[in-house]
Image (cartoon, rainbow, N blue to C red; front, side, top):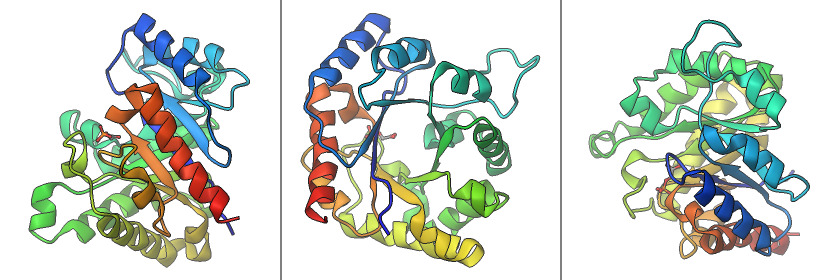
Length: 257
Ligand code: PGA
């Protein structure tokens, strides 16, 4: 069975509205290969524009975060139902920057997973260890804790709708990627952990790698058997490099058919 291949571009807190518009236009002009779902994840302020601008292009839109609540007195939060209503289809949950700078822990993220799924969004649940954790050889324990804490409350039917991103914190924005072997090892481990609870379903979950993915290393990373694409930060801010990363996944996908 083939898993859905996904390449998502996380713009983080970059671009103002007019810069975002220009970048979306450039992306629309790129020649994108088949067999991959490309997802653009701009700042909240750009989402409405992005959905409008990317209508009927095959490019999907995602949000970088969402509230664990549906509506109410939660100043500054954005509801998953509002995102769904707007035409946003994906949402990043538990990015390491949110875990590290905004204190988002697993039980909070578990609520966000439930809320996003209840509102027809596809959550991209992020896990990853810090350099210190890897050096202390506790990275497997950390990943297990993040997977169990954020996902194990979900039913099999809910889990089937999720995407998981492995993003080692030491590789994010550092120009230092995990080697394809290191990334593959963790992706396979995540499938093992999921198998304990969900059995064979673990083989059907799309799992993408993030951390300094660029057009030069994408092919090698995406060639690994348990890697189904990428979550791309810096390199998604340039249309040509993001297109090249999408096309690396597309070429591998087409070669395997
Ligand atoms: P990066 O970011 O590609 O700039 O390392 C990846 C991410 O944080 O999703």
